[in-house]
Image 1 (cartoon, rainbow, N blue to C red):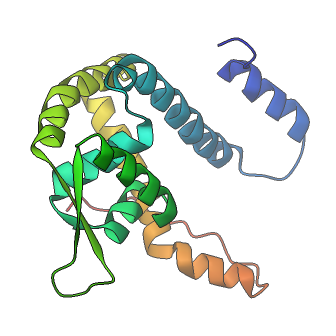
Image 2: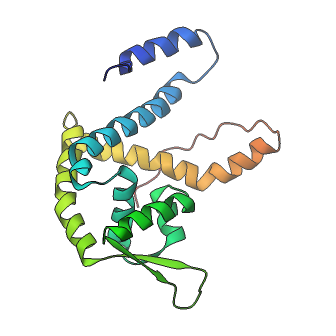
Length: 190
């Protein structure tokens, strides 16, 4: 992409800048590449698949969550999509105006709102998702099936580490204590 450095250039610049800083370089590289990969994949999927259906990444993720989970409270959709409730409100309004989702009041709690796909939303996901998955196959094309499984398991472990221990870590950091690094071994498969 014009104006952006290649991954190799970025890595070389970071190595030169950090010199002999006492840091964990492998962990830094892993997190940096999670971010780089997510950004590259997101941009590719927006440009190759989603744009043709006039969808943003966020709109697609909201549709995906509601498609998979079925009718859901907006707060749960926002959380699963990784967006704020305010962002979800705007995205849901746009999707509703396009006839892809419907919003309804919660049957027992008037403060809550439910989201569900319309028939048009269901049809759109059935049409778009196979093309989306084809591009998922493209972006992982240099990996074998076993490598894809291993990568998915490794990333799942990263997510579990944050989900299971992130809050405790944040509290420790906020209290000014220097926590010892948590080095959990590989988790057994469930």
